[in-house]
Amino acid sequence: MKDDASIFWGNVKKEIKSQNTTHEWVAKNSGISFNTFQGWISKEIFPRLNEAIRIATSLNTSVEYLASGSVRDNNKSINIICQSLPKIQEHLELIKQAAKELR
Image 1 (cartoon, rainbow, N blue to C red):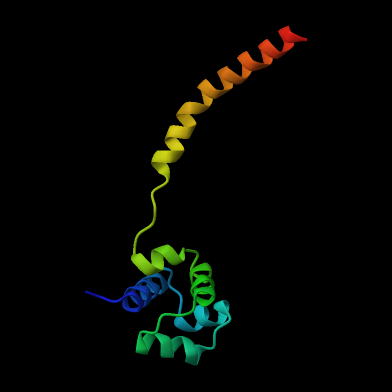
Image 2 (cartoon, rainbow, N blue to C red):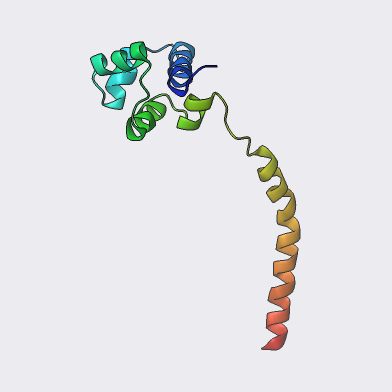
């Protein structure tokens, strides 16, 4: 089984390739020296959290994705909320009407 750093750097490399960018660009854009960046990759050293965040931000992704290869699917929750909105609005209108009647 791969360790966390191996998974992280594997996903970083995958993103670099899919975005047609370079290690140099990600390092520079993350505020990390290229030598340090390359050293972490070659030695499979997991960066500190603040550095991992900067790398993920440079790649327009999340640390969660880089560390695990997956992301949470919020679509189900969003769909439930969207489906509930008309009913919520209906209830709000009833509350407004009741408030007017109490005045």
